[in-house]
Length: 359
Image: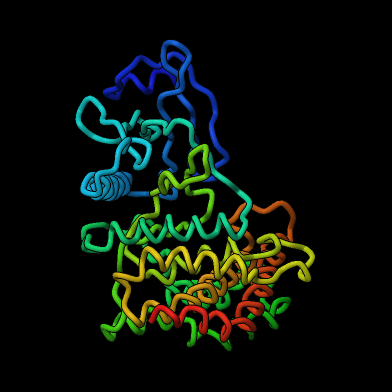
């Protein structure tokens, strides 16, 4: 009954009569809302304001991006735009979120007859590449300074290395000596992994509007398997396209699990990489610079290295950020990510040669 009172703060088209838990997201709490007649019509979310501390900025970003995408779809002559772009409902006072004194809430239209996937195949990877490539293409003429950073320095490697150094200096859990070998491996690669920030300062790499969470389950497909739209826009903010490419490679092209205990299972799947790169470049080649294109495979190494650093930082700090299921979980994650990084490094020339065809 408490959940059913939240929609009363929004300008809804139909009365909500029931709610059920929806999805498997780890950040926000989500419910599917049913209207009279028993049909699901809306999606209600409680925003995790401990992670997204500036909810007004968060929702402003999302509103600007969805409005821009909807305008682009209209220009193309697309039909049924409410299935191809998210639409958030306004509250009675004209906002896209409601604060009830404790929590922040938002409601969007449910996209009917849609599905998402958690596992990946080359065919699905190709479709995902086209989806995120088209997402970037539609937003390529949107100035990056129109949006703010919902999580400051989220994909800033220099910042992540400073956090790592702070953890090493403090060593609050007394674990630094145990992981000396991994610390050395991170140090060997540190300078090479800060290329994007250096190129940005030199004016050779520009920031664009990024998704910053390019996983296949953040794309909705229709019943026939065609892409409907990109979802989960909380981390949409200024960034570098190689980070978005890299995040998909890190998550989608890994033959093992992010925390795999058996490191022999962890490799980069080149078929997944090539399919994604092919789909992505078919949509994005028209607006990317030669520098951006050439760095796309490097993005996979960068984001994998970054996650290796972040997991190890949390382990050294005593597991204060990521949820763990056993005392060495973050160390296990670190080793699995580092193994993937080594595989990406071994395939670097092959990946670079594949992407050169678009330069």
